[in-house]
Amino acid sequence: MAAADILQRFGREFPKGTVLFREGDPGREMFVIQSGRVTITKRAGSVEKVLATLRQGDFFGEMAILSRRPRSATAACAEDARLILVDPPTFEAMIRSNGEIAARIIKKLADRLEEADGLISNLLLLDGRSRVVHFLAQQAERAARGPGPVRLALALAALAALVGLGAGQVEEALARLVRAGVVALEPGAIVIPDVSMLRRALEFLQLKASGGEAP
Image (cartoon, rainbow, N blue to C red; front, side, top):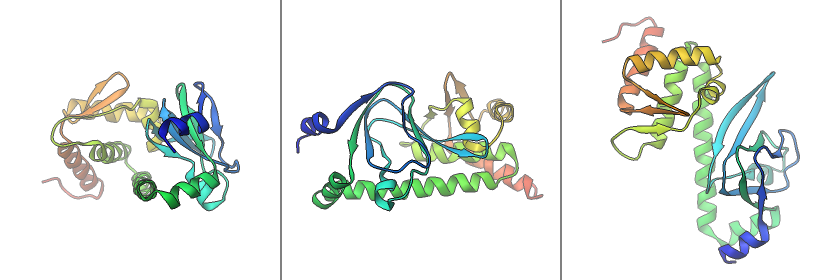
């Protein structure tokens, strides 16, 4: 089926703020983002934590189809979005007939498992500054496309939710990193001039937290 036919048959437009599904809902389809952004959130106690912000080309919701279990998180449109909705029979047909699609899904699942491991490791860190540096280092390493600065489109509130800290704690940690020249701040973004410098800062904080001495 041609791309235009797929868009015509399965494509739908959703305005900003639309909740596509909520945690605990039954899963009836997966989604592929053609345009716009979608945030994935999960409730931890009384706090709603942002797990990911997805963009054009990303897909989500496939786990409910694969496992036949309720949705494990909530998905909402962060801006007007055009999405392709894929039901279970269509999903199975795509997997069986297109090895490239199957490979992409397997790779995406592996990436998500790695990211989940990173978030768990981050939340085990007691020191707030270490949490911030650890998270930024992981994201920067994934986003890096070679030597040079890495720009992460990440607002302070979203970063605070992801690392499980208050906005004030994150702001203080970022201010220290800025003074040290490890990061720079832009409206709605964090710039890492040198990822290796950020990684060394994390090693220093972990060594300090363990009671050791920095070299």
